[in-house]
Image (cartoon, rainbow, N blue to C red):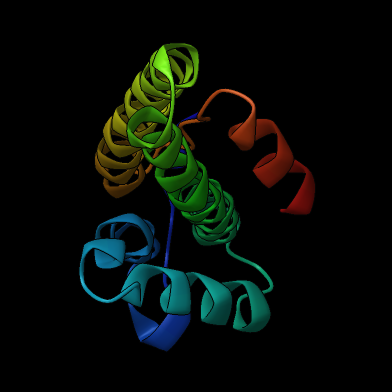
Length: 132
């Protein structure tokens, strides 16, 4: 969905800039997560900013949940017998691929958000849309 008339949002910034920063800001001390939370709390009218803020929050939470899972899998890989090592390595590989997918979706959503589009990331985008 393209939202050409995106207007102003949090801190008087253009909504498309807020959408971009909600994602890319996470590469700098989770600034994007902080901005997203502020946007969700403060912004009541701008659907573009609210959608991308919610989607960024959900995507960041998903990525944070993957970190301990990844370390457990790597621990299994190096901890024991051949079966647990193979299982840990395989699951670790799956978690790595999911992590890379999250990274790609974050970049894609940032670009689309800056263009004024409500790009929905699979699964997460549906939840974000409900909260807007």
